[in-house]
Length: 82
Figure: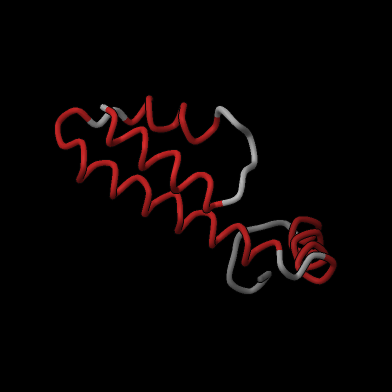
């Protein structure tokens, strides 16, 4: 990381420690990102011009951390109802 980024050494050490201590964190983060992007794309397709990015973000964030299955269904219901 030091050779390929402009990050300071302390930040690099911290990142490496985080990946070693919590090996599933990065994978979980990426899976969440993929699921949220898919829900967003599906909502855009369903809603067309009525899609509201601020409304989408409100729906995603309003319940805090939830299982992706719950979030997927919640966004599907929201987009179908509008």
